[in-house]
Each structure stands twice: as C-alpha cells, then as structure tokens.
Length: 365
Picture 1 (tube, rainbow, N blue to C red):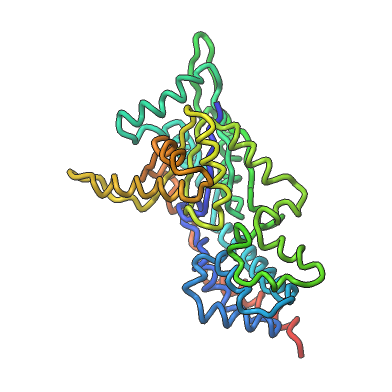
Picture 2 (cartoon, helix red, strand yellow):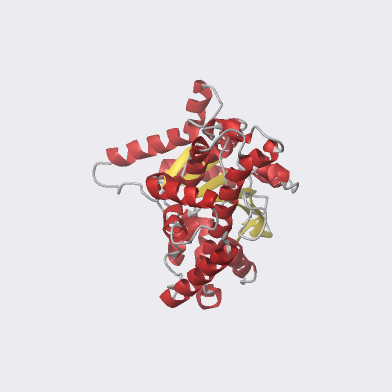
C-alpha cells in the first residue's frame, strides 16, 4: 500500500524556520543591488511589498514592468532573486540540530501510522477501509516535497536509521514492516535544479518580454513544468507517477495556490480515477470544534472547493470526488514544532555583510 505525503513550506515553518517569502523579502531588501536592472527590481519590490508574500505570482507580474524583448533583463532579476533565496534558506537550515533533536524527530514520524485517528467515526471508517483492502501489503510512505530545503530529507535519514520507528502490522502469520519509499523534490533544492515560477502563461503579465532570440529558454525558467523539463531529470513525471501509484494522499503544510494548480488538477484526476482512493488535506487554520460545529463544517467544505476549483473535471465529477477529500486541523508533526535553534544575530549580520561586500565588488564603476 502506497501512502504519499505532499509536503509544503508549512513543514519548515512548523520546525520554527523563517522560510516564508515575506521573511526572505525583508532580507532581500537589505542586499545592495549590483546593477541598474536590479536596482529597478528592488524598487519595485519595495513599492509593492504586499505582492511578494506570493513571490512566484509577483515575479510573473513583474514582466508587466518591462519592455518587449528584454528577456535577459528579466532573467537577471529572476536569477538574482533565486540565488539570494537559496543563500537565505541555507542560513535557515543551519538552525537545525538533528543530533540534538533525533529522538523527537523519530517520534514525530511514528505519527505517519496515525493519520486517520483524529477523524470522526464515520469518516475514519471510510479511510480505514483503504488500509483493510490492502492489509496483505506492507505500507510504503512516499514523499513529494515542494520545498527547496533539505529538512525533510534530514529528518527521514534519521527515521530510516531509527529502530522500528515506522511500525508494522500483521497479516495472518506475517509481520509486514512499514518503510520509507521515494522522496522527490519537485521544485529542486537550494543546491540543484531550483524551480521558481508560475503555473502557466496566464500568470505572466507581459509575455512579449520573451519575444527575442532564445526567449523561449528564458520563459521556460519561469513556467514550472517547463523549467523542470529543461533540467532533463524527469522530476515532474517521477512525481506524477508516485501520485498515480498512491492509494492514499496526505497534503501537509501547503497552501492550495494558483502557481501549483497543475498538481491540484492531477490529484483531482487521480481521485476520480478510482473510487477507493482518498485524499487528506491538513489545514493549520481550521476553526476549533465547539458545541456548534457549523464554522468547522463550513471551513471543511470551503477547503474541499479550494482543491476542486483547480481541476479540469466537470462539475459533476468535482462533486463526486469531494466526499473523498478529508480535511483536518491536526498537526501530525506537532512533536517537532519550533525545534529550530535561534540564529545568532551576529552570524546573520556577518553573512549579510559578506553578501553586500561581494555585490559591491561586482557593481559597475
């Protein structure tokens, strides 16, 4: 049985890392731009800072500030933003002490076996049927990660080397061990094949920026699926195959946004392909359950619609799959909440000073 987790930035934020685009933009504004093009880009960010909490959408909008055919100018800004983002995230990653936190990390991942326990009885029975129908198979946990950091990989490394942390179940006289399967970084990492951009052409304000020689290559780096394809590693198809082979999918720490609607469409299509498949979506901002549960039920319904609205399925099929989308406010990784260490202010300033120094050396006279 294959259970697949889609892991978003909420995983890193749960650890206590400052990995939101808003936090990075605060950092980016302090870096001295080394060219006139980057100065204009920095000014645009400062004048439109509210846009940059959704930085990928904002990057697509920035094309509207440029002239036709200046793809190279756009690429300079896009590349600089991504390079500085990678540097910033590496700084955040240094806040993790895996040796010191190994026991609670292993304990947290043991919760992968408990993902249906928080649901009410009727819903839990539906989800439990997926396990019962595949009781003769070992459980394999796969991960599709949308983060550039290595935090998930480091945690899983500890879990793999932990003794029996993922558990097992019995089938007849057999004991079937649960295990980690594949880990796929669909958007690359801070070190390799970073994919930062929009879902499709409709999210590019001014596409004729790329009307120039080699404009298609520049544009490819802004559209996620094309950027992935340009790296020739089949990352997109590998992740799509993991989804297709899944029996249960759990989305953790992801906002259901426009720039990843390709994936939401794929998941809806996956759901519609087999009536036994079930989807669990974790939402950190669900209202508390009280004596009157209407606010919670409304939030559940809206969360389901947030998924299906990105689907290319017709309305009848969307309605049909909504009953197999299960919403939870439970934090399965609550045991490792805020375990990141504080980054010394002196070290932060030293790194920032080094970056600024390098920029000034490269600045035109």
